[in-house]
Length: 62
Image (tube, rainbow, N blue to C red; front, side):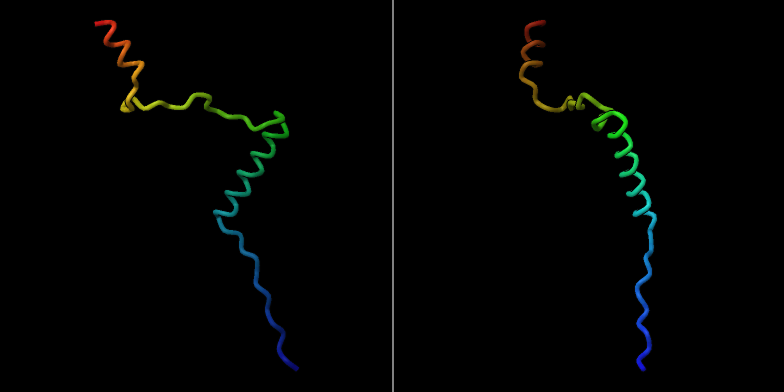
């Protein structure tokens, strides 16, 4: 008789645990509100970007 093969044991890592919790929280949020809720509605606009309209307004005030 051959010895029995040992199967791989399932190991849940901390990353897997965090991922599962985030997914569960998101599913609860969708079930509660009917859609995903976004916390931030406006995107941050960098002041360093070239903005033609802002430049024209500043020139008009001077």
